[in-house]
Structure formats: C-alpha cells, structure tokens
Image 1 (spheres, rainbow, N blue to C red):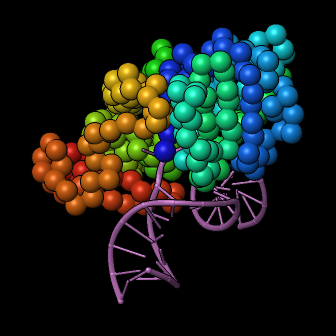
Image 2 (cartoon, rainbow, N blue to C red; image 1 turned 180 degrees about the vertical axis):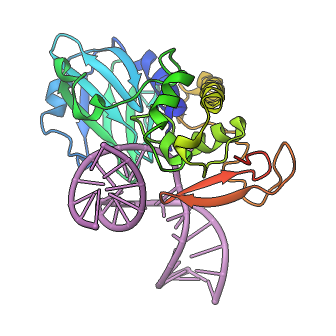
Length: 277
DNA sequence: CTGAGCACCTGAGGGC
DNA sequence: TGCCCTCAGGTGCTCA
C-alpha cells in the first residue's frame, strides 16, 4: 500500500511514541521479511532510544541513540503500524504482527501480511552508501526535483513515462497510484515514451507530482488526530483518487470513461481525452 | 547500460 | 459453502 504520503504519515504518527522513548522490549515473532530480521535485532534496540526519525524514499530511518547503528524500516506492499496506549488492556497479538516495540507509555506493532517489508539494523556511517539508498534519485518535495532535473533524467529512457516515474532512481516515493494521479493532473498520456516529453511537460509534471503528494500527505495528516486510539492504525486513510481504480467511470473533468491498461505488470488508469499525449 | 519478466507472500473478491 | 482464478499501493534479481 504505502507510497511516499503513507510512509510520511506513518512516520509522523510514530514519532510522538517512539522518538526519544526508551525501548523496554522489542519482540520479533516472524523474522522472515524481504530480508530476514537479524537475530540480534532485539538485543541491539532494547534499552535504547530512537532519535532523528526521518523518511528517505519509502524508508523510515531512525538512529539508535548511544550506538553507531541506524534502524531502517520499509512497509513493502502491506506493512502497517498499530499503536496501543492502553497498556493495561492490550488486545492479543494479531495475525501477521511480526514485531512489537514496547515503551513505558505505548506498544507499537508492525504488521505485514505479505512480508515484503524490511526491518534492518545498519551501521549509521553506511547509511548514505547502503545499497538500498545509494542509487536513489531526488526527493520529490525538495527543490532538487525540478523540471530541468526530470527532463534530463528522461532523456535516456525509451520506456513509457508511467513506469519511469515509479523508478526511484528518477524520483523517490512515487508508486503505482500517484504515478497515474500525477500524469492525469499533468494531462500527459502514461503510454508516452519518457524521452518524448517536452521540457515544458516535464516541468508541469514535476509540479503535479509535488501537488498530488502534498495533498495526500495533508489528507493523511488530518486523520492523525485519531492515531492514538486503541485500534489506531497508521498509514491508511481515505484517498480521493481522480483516475486510480476508476476504470469505466466518467472522468471527473470531461466525463470520458477512464481507461485501465497494464504497463510493466502494473495497472495504469488514465483519461484518454484529458491525457492525449 | 537498458528493459522485460519473474520472484517473493498472503488475502480479498468475483465467478461458478 | 468452497474452489479456482485474478489482482493488490514494492522492489530486487536474472536474462536478453
């Protein structure tokens, strides 16, 4: 599920409970994620605090205070966190709750049915050069991501623009939903060859990506006031998509039926009238 | 180098 | 009710 806005919302939801709080226990119930959780994972965290919690691409990073290590989390397709504050009345561990972090005031559970997620401890000095982070392109909500940068990145790409937008080496954090949504807003056909976008189109697309992601973060943030409730889950909120998942329904701008196609084994949605090229 | 295809894994939903 | 099929918001690997 999680693209950049969901990861950002998850991070903001976790911070009040995990940042600066001593981890009294960390229990791993299922270690077999995309990479196995290190057998010393718990030992390296218990009694420590997480600080400097932040997001890079779809990763959540946190320094383990007083050590030379950094915690790296990824939600994969189905990862989610649930926070419980009523410690005297905790519900039983749910199916696919793989890790439970406990502090004096909260219990934070990581649940991931498909187990495409990640929970790694890596040396802090290696973070910048870690294979998972080394080849990442610019963060979309920074000034480094502008029309010039995107246009340049598209020049060697012969594949269609939509799968190219999902390549984190081009721009971070844009997944299957927001790729379709951004292209709709920009009026660009998702099947158009990346290198055939004009400089002007690249500039428009950059602005649309920033807008779509910013709006989605705001929508997620507005649900955060509830996140501390006993069954409060992070990272899921009511999305309002303009094309994603709306195959056959009328375009919200021109009423032309939204079309679904498959690109690189992923569904793409677009309005053939509003996105001619 | 690029791009296409497959792999990992469980669950939800539709058709019969 | 149950079986079978397809699809799901990610990403890394192999191979041409």
